Length: 110
Image (cartoon, rainbow, N blue to C red; front, side, top):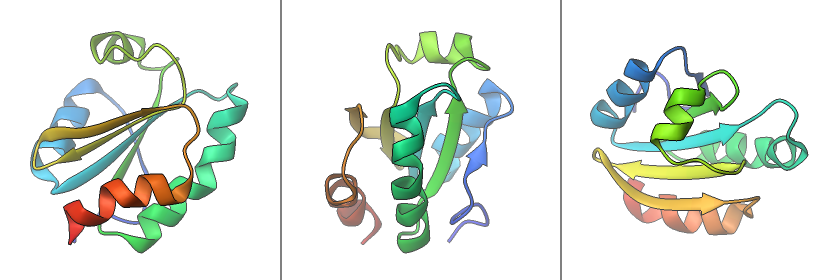
């Protein structure tokens, strides 16, 4: 398991995003904003997934990383992307329940 698993990584720059996507087995990317109520509602679920599965969680504040959000075509928050072995496996827009997200992550980490 990666040293970043169980601890959300707060993105510093776009290059770091690519590094994680290409080097980590399973990555959950949480596009959020500080002002976003639904994003705050989703935070505990994201942390529970990080605690329960060998997944790297990357938190991307779309206000701080506007260029990356545009490049990734993030038009609303929260948006969750799941990557496996460098490829996007799933994208969710809006608040998702834990079971839905776990149902995507679990087969990728098993």
